[in-house]
Length: 338
Image 1 (spheres, helix red, strand yellow):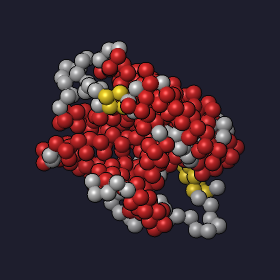
Image 2 (cartoon, rainbow, N blue to C red):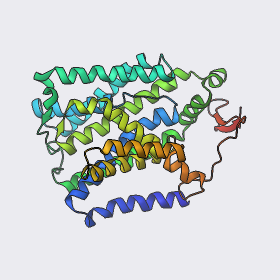
Image 3 (cartoon, one colour):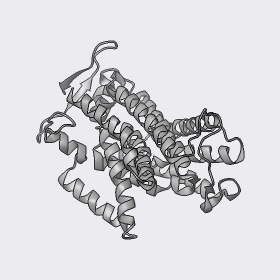
């Protein structure tokens, strides 16, 4: 009950806070929500499925480039451009998943990085189409195809907020469904889930594609927000940044990565205004969090019995973690020690 009240209060606060912010602060809050979605998309495969990725920016960039190219060179229609961006991200994730999910652990990490770098190289070298390292400036805010224009900062913020709340609710349903419970089981012990009769590759592949679609969605929102797209959106820097967001906020907590994304965006803008070495500051913060709060900020709050979750004690040395199992289709998931 407290959690629901907290979520409702947070949504109400996000709806009312724009009236107390300047245009710059409103733009910064909009960017936070976009990158919160990006971080939650990676958390679905990393935090719940246990699938590390250093190429998650590929789907973000593909969505952004698709929207930018269509809006500038084909047709400026929100429904067509936005839908095409989602389809392009889904197709890319589906193809990459067929290749990447053949590997595990560090090999999976390297394959996702290599695949994303291929797209980065295409975007960087195909200058006549993508603009090369100059990118594609002047992408207009969506107006055609909508009953109202989203050109204004306030109107676009509320559009992003509605999308953020809707996607967060959908992901919350997914991670608490039998599908989400199966993902957690795969993360904890894939071999034992196979023994229970689950096609673990199919679950991982579905999560991989779904995460790619949500990442593409955030890329769509960001290209409209920034009015610009460049190969940097496909780079390893973006992939590493979203990975840090997830780890900083707390992998496997859904709202933790959203918090991590907001913190990183805030730090980037505040620290970079004082020094060009903001990445060094970010690295120091990451090391400190890893040493003193390995479960991330949200995990630390949950372990302390904070308002964001019930107290949780990690398994002691020699104790096996609890994993969800689904004995038979149609039955409610249960938790047991294995």
